[in-house]
Image (cartoon, rainbow, N blue to C red):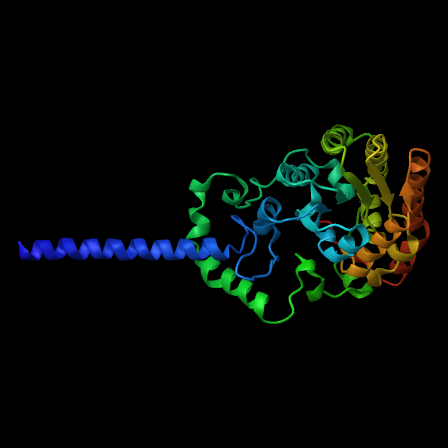
Length: 365
């Protein structure tokens, strides 16, 4: 009997110890909360943001801000303070790889739910206009327990060895050691190089030139994506939306030409621009024909990703009212983009071809 009672007492103590440990682990994760799932930073910690799939959604729910910097990975190298000082706002990034319209609108919906937003600075990637108008978070393996509002499925977060032993120490170290800059959220440029050699080395050019597709080939998807963005603009008339088409490199336009997509891309941009400009709370800018930037491959690390200096340059143009599209000029200005694409084929790319600087993708690949 004594042995039986001893065993029961041992089990009870073990159960209590396990329960205490679980509470301590979950409590530690809750207090430090490196993914900002429950709250903004406590205990003097900085907002250490380097993992958008895990952190972006929580910051949009829980941080204090009144402006959004929205887009794909090309937006990550913006310094939030540029926008804050220029527009008198407190900005935060709403970032999704590839910049699919539906995904970004999902982030916008999250932000608008509990925040009054003065400005949305939205980077329109040309490829986003022809993507499926459906969110991709679940299909691409994002941690959906961080995206929903169900506290009962947070176990993978609260009891996560990597969160406890890696993410929290990293958050603490960056908060109190070194010079981590909160305005450089998700910034990757610090670890990258930008050069003609790197951009050309990462551009694997197709050996085939596909016949140019009919310009209407993406109309169905483009119209659906246009509806998504227009719905955001119409739902928030007191918010000023500043959209812009970014400075992709000439290599991207060469790739689009060889894939037979250029005409369809130009049409999608015209249709999107026309729809957005119907609204008084919208401005649209286009930096796709800024030849000085786009032909200088030292600004790039691959076909699309440019240095932070180009991010700042585009903002400076916006502030100066340069490269703005209006209902009166948008067709003419976007036709200049098409003319630039033609120039890439007829003149500019020839130098790299003649000097053997382009890597060709083998046909069997």
